[in-house]
Length: 433
Image (cartoon, rainbow, N blue to C red; front, side, top):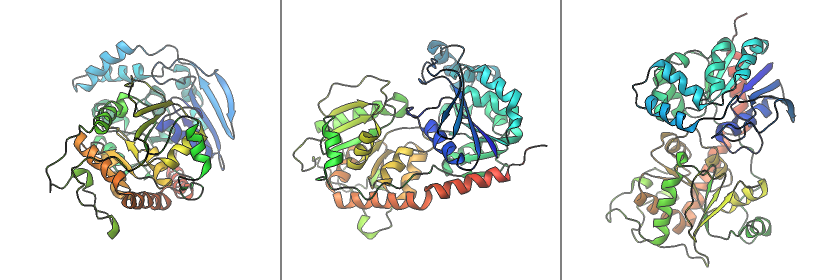
């Protein structure tokens, strides 16, 4: 088939869940199809400043066509229109204005879809909230397959989405929770599948801490065991403000705990293996028994102030070797985001046998952890502290949770399984002749 993939920004060095998902799926589709990516020239998702040159380039087998944004995002204007839309009292016109202000404002990309979109057999659109998808998909609805990456945030309640979500000829969802969320807005009658994201097997099992390669890589950036990891955009929208607040309280020993004998909500998942039937953690706060103090490592682009704290290390965007070393050595992966359609870094952690501690206020994260039985979840600072204590102070149980996460990834998220689901939807979508 001749396919197009439409995404708001695209690149190997872009740290974003939907962008990474699009690139990985497009690369695998290109093994058997003719695939063109239609995207903006932007690298930064806040301003949409043009960074890449417009025109055509290649990324392996992928043909990339980039279109410039005609202006930067006006953050003051965007905040104003967001308040009106998120209040639930906006008009359809104001909601349409929100999608323009959210950007990237690439009218030439939409014109390209209007003029040549029907020359593709199928067009896959990522992320309903961005200008190229919201305004481009209706032009080719008969062959459009939407990967909505929908989250349980205020935008999903916008009235304009009821009509929009009825347009696609097919759907690819990342989790069952996302599929349910979209179905609440509009019945999904088109061919659809919950695909998640493909993950390649990690090479071998987790290495012992005495092995040289990963430890040397981490030593070069000043990281030593033990550490817990946050991987991704360091951003308030990703829950990083609460993460930093909870963690600094945790290391200072100022966390609050539930009364003795009370079952902790963070540990309420029922584990299948007898060895992982967790009781409530001790309410006594204790650091892991190692020669170094526990650190929180933040790896990813930083879009917010970070406190100057001896237990917090900020690395910014890291190369693949450092990223792999962090994932292979972390005691726990922390995922504080309140809004997710699928956490790919959670899958990557499980792929390496690392247990996770996630924000239970996000239904998707809570569902991922329950299905995999690969970690714990929290709602409050006290639950965060209790969950982290448990995972650090019970290494055998933590390893079991990580192993269960890896088994779940092996069963659900290997590329042959994911691509078979995608190919099935591609085949079932029948564009008008």
